Amino acid sequence: MIEFLNNPQLLRVNDVQDWLSDCAFGSNIIITRLLFIFVDNKKIQELNKKFLSHDRPTDIITFPYDTKQGIEAEVFISLEMAAENAKEYSQTLENELLRLISHGFLHLIGYTDATPDSRKIMSNKENQMIELFHVKHKSSADV
Image 1 (tube, rainbow, N blue to C red):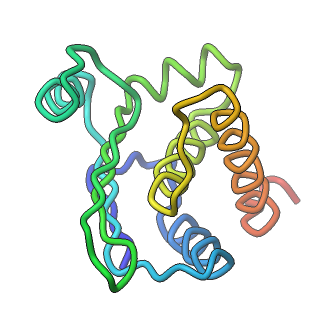
Image 2 (tube, rainbow, N blue to C red; image 1 turned 90 degrees about the vertical axis):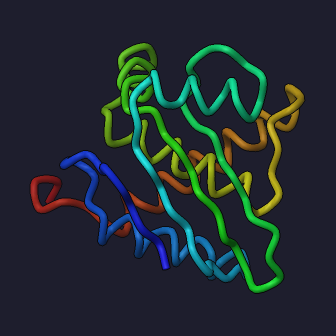
């Protein structure tokens, strides 16, 4: 089950659920419960300080729960940081949200971003996931 709380209107939830399910299947992973919660900078900074001892906002925080049945996690995404990142990297907000969702998913299946090499690998995987989304879920305006 993949759920979204406070999701922005531009995010096509059914398409994102379908895409993540495909990515999980392709990675031989079962998603038991994956909850994406969209918050503001104040809330994500509180979480970052409380759980990671970083007193600043961040774009995403992933909380996996130790379960043997499959992925069970909560992922918090700052909509404000996503909008800032989209502007900084000349991306649409939708693409930036897909990147953050991909990033959280990749952490949950074992990818890390602690070193320059692992960040590069993760970035490439994020790009592959975003491309898969757009190939499968072209909007009617794209046709």
